[in-house]
Image (tube, rainbow, N blue to C red; front, side, top):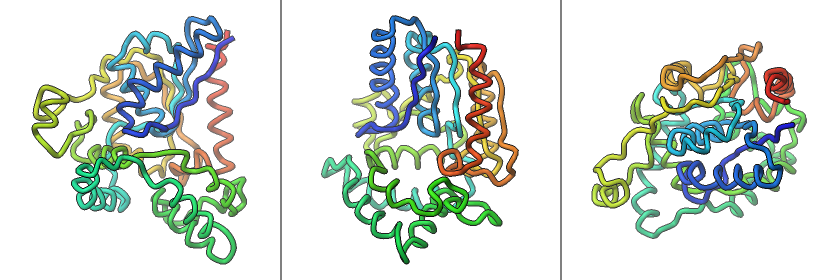
Length: 280
């Protein structure tokens, strides 16, 4: 019997700290409680990205993961041609200097929840759906993913608890992933001196993801703009331990569909099949 660790972003700093501190702490706790030597890891979106960081920088923890099953995995956003990353870069350029100076790192979670609860029910529900479709960069012809969701178009209760936490630095770090194909590196501070103090160099080195040895199974959607084909190929070239890639048969399956769509059941069934050889 193996235990599964499902990872989502919850760090108040960035996914870098999530990978270096949160993941190892969770793994140690699970293995100590169960007395198992290894576990299986399930990651979605940033939970996939942060696993690669942990396994590359802390290989001793990579050896504690028997296999990883990563949904919508990505390392960079260089080939993302949607408006979301452009908007993110614009917001980052205007807010990062001020919030860094004021040491504001947490997203205003309470305010976001209040706004979403108002706009995600009743006659105003179209505002919520439209905003989520833009963030997910929904493909033309699909409509809004909530239409295909178990939530049946009513995401009010979902937004009572989402987002659980978040940080501005995570937002800025995501924007930096679009700087270049090889831009998968720790957070680059706007101050050269701060980078020197933190990393010892003006620009932090790239994550050495070629060191990852965990057997990795990946699950992707053909219309997932946040995991563009070029960015996936970069990850595939860099991470040599990828066992296989499973693509969702729906050509319009997008990033948010992994959590919102009934079609995600196909992903979960395939993942369970892939786990069969490891659940001993």
